[in-house]
Length: 241
Image 1: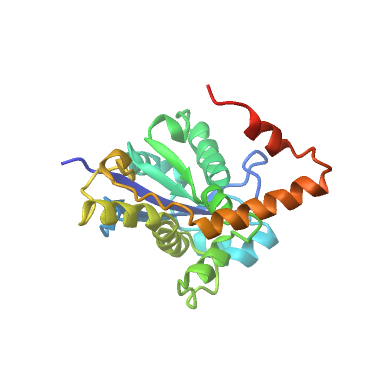
Image 2: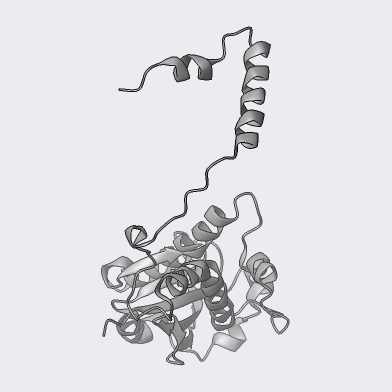
């Protein structure tokens, strides 16, 4: 049986710039296998060896006193890599978290995140394609899908990953439903979200005489308004090969 392993991942950091030395202080990961929660999650805090920026501290609330006795990232790097290995990562605004993880691995002389995971899916990019022009933050998507976030006073990596797992299932539920409707049952593990259209018989609905007459009347009005220069008339007059 094919197993599709996905890890929904989120981080909290000391600030916004990995290039300028900001560090990861919390990592939260939720495991999905064939779109089902497994409970095999990973949640770690880190001592960043630097202060968090005031704006970041207001977001996550993790002070240096809270993190002082946590392990440094280098101590847990091997565990993190083995946990993530060969999985598809689901991340909201993936470039941010990926950049921070790449910077942490680079400090240890290790390769980038994409060198040991199967793929990275950005739910922010997905949401923007589904809801263009809308607010697509994690909070906005939770509100849109009716996902309860009432116990979230601060951003936390594991809590945000749990919320994102729900958001991801909602964003991709249409694919799952399409498989169920076409096959008449639950999707098989490892099945791709596609339907073989050649196996379907599609009805052909032809316009009635009344509808055709109404359509022709509209075309005549357009032709008159253009002074007889409507392009569709010229195209329709060309004989088909």
